[in-house]
Length: 348
Image 1 (cartoon, one colour):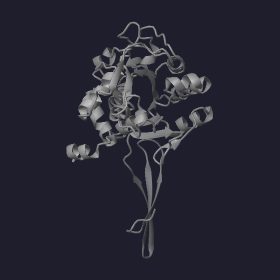
Image 2 (cartoon, rainbow, N blue to C red; image 1 turned 30 degrees about the vertical axis):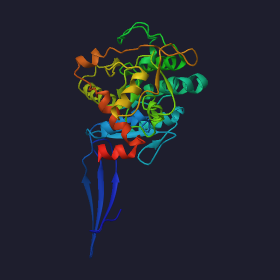
Image 3 (cartoon, rainbow, N blue to C red; image 1 turned 180 degrees about the horizontal axis):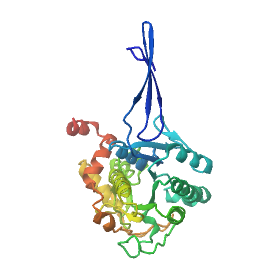
Image 4 (tube, rainbow, N blue to C red; image 1 turned 90 degrees about the horizontal axis):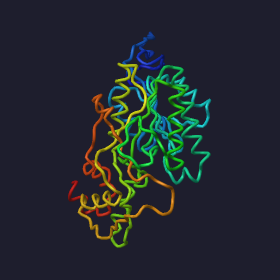
């Protein structure tokens, strides 16, 4: 690039912490070439699924806290993220060899249980095979890997669940995530598995989280909405999970013995019906059209009733934060409030 002062600048990246900038300075009768050291973060993280709800939060958390963050996406890749097909082992090897991260946060997954049931081969390729490949390549360069997993590896019959409790998933989504855990820890014994529950946060559309998706029903006052009051959820803000990923990565830099399975979750128990009623209460909206369904679902993909996670391992390490649901959900839903007059009164 050419600056106003007459400088032409080339930047060449050598490695984390050792980036150089070449500057050519033009003045009447002379040309000078200077090599200038640049400050580059000494910690680099690679994030898969960086365009997704969790991935965006993880990328921002690391970037805001002194890390050089490199994000990869696929269908929603945008200028600040690179596009990669994680089903291509060669492409996976290429990005890890190119970035040479200190940490890899593997957020990319097929996380929708109904889609997993209808597309089992694709789901297994993404949740299991690509995860094993990422683990192998991360281990080869000595990068710490966090594999994002789910509370759905349990059947919900004996909560709360500790990290060493025996998994027993009910559906294909949970089964593939469990298979992914196992191949990750086999290919990279120094990796970590982080199981999390229902997530919500700053969505790009309400349907991006099954929690925020309920807001459409809440605002449709004239239509009765029958909402599950059987299953027990522990809605967790993605910003909290992102904080855990960063803190765990930084602890691992100091202590190479940190590995294995970890749990993180919000601690507020709510059914989807109670989540919807809370949304209505926060925004002073009618809720008499919301109807609880107390029976277990008779059709559709099997889901566990209560998979509360015991998070004491991370808590003992001093890792984690929890955003109160009323505060977190208010922040991420108000842009989608249909009553613009109410929104302007409260927020402006």
